[in-house]
Length: 191
Image (cartoon, rainbow, N blue to C red; front, top):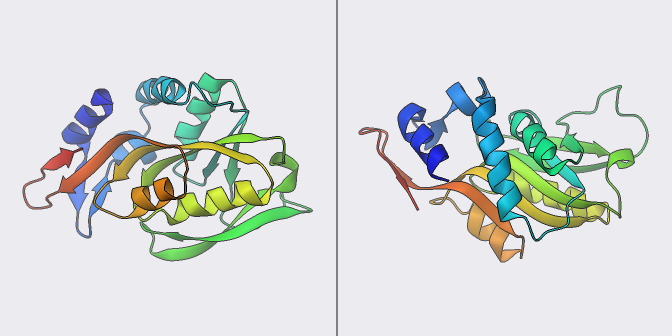
């Protein structure tokens, strides 16, 4: 998606450790008009899939997932990273490792909101090693629901997550795939 790539080139900042900082428009301050365009693009890319629910993980995937859900006209559910008093009763849970935060989380979805009749499109902002996405796929499959696909805003193509998820047979669509980044020059090369 050229509009997204242009925005990444303009406002993205490369930090130590292969971190691409895009918080000025994606995951801290959010450009909702850009999100809407991304939602329309995901709708095109998953046009042949039956989807009745969007799933993401807290926190930075929620904004884009909400706009995508609006475009698809379906509800959005987000996996929480900790048990709260608001989630009572039966839950699906799995562990995921966050590349950005360098820690492992238990993620939780109430069984009330994910079931065997659901056809789920998973949405997230980044794909690096694929651990968060793998955990979300496991939650969907554990519920007996169908993974209709996974939509990622930015995939780090030089890390193993995309290949790992595609090798699992998941219909994966990334709007921008970064082939390489140079912290010293600020250059970002897309696939």
